[in-house]
Image 1 (cartoon, helix red, strand yellow):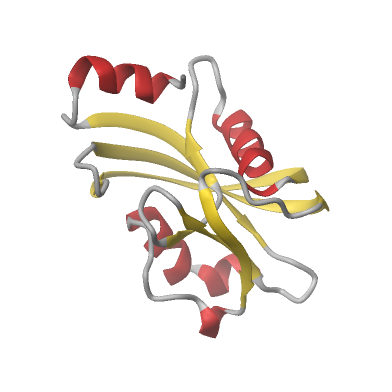
Image 2 (cartoon, rainbow, N blue to C red):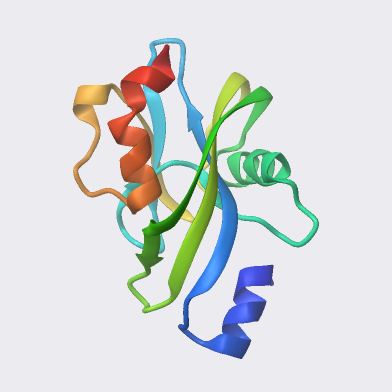
Length: 150
């Protein structure tokens, strides 16, 4: 059981700070990898909450591998997003205040594999990105995608 799930048993659906990482990965055709998330039924980027003792880069590497089967040779740190604009309420009522580091994955290796956190993985050109987005961090990445692709 992960740290956030352990906290949820104690505090229920009340708001929690949730440090974590989001990974933006492009393929050789400059398409971005997105996942159809099983918890929200919406599209997002690989990533998730940190576990105790994780650095944000550790979190990004672990989540990329767990959720996609891919490994990055290196991660390029972009920014940290936090504050009330990044609050999110899951469909089950759990509330979080994200403190999310955004990374770009460089030098991807491995084979795409869907895990239990994803219903689907797909590569999208910017004009193909689905409208049903997972939350405020996903929205920030999509809004800044052209800059991130450079």
